[in-house]
Image (cartoon, rainbow, N blue to C red; front, top):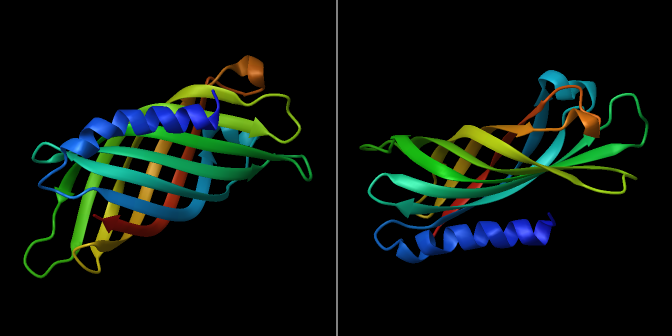
Length: 184
């Protein structure tokens, strides 16, 4: 599945919620950090830089729907000048667990979702896409009503095919990012 189609699917999934968001604000985040592979995929890929963005919109009184895309680049273990690009396209639900109270500017939320992770090795004839699940959270510090600093640890697990060169049936990659969130 191409990146263009994945972007379209995420946009279509978020559109009804964004249009229904009237009392609480829609938020957009921009992040950068490290994507950390763990377990079997460490036989193939090393920790590498990543960046991402997300859209969040209210869904009822407390829940929110969250769409996120994270893009990472990893050196291939044992190969010079060979990279694998791992992209994460996730849609899911989130729930605030700590909200600002009094003078506090801190908030914490948790999220879970599903989507697709793609693996593109330099020089390979095709990109492999796999179903993936996600759990994570966000820690925010509000600079104003509309801008927050953000820490976002996420855990994404792709259900991969060993016939495609993986050493196990799952690929765990953790985007650990920091950035900013803007509310509209």
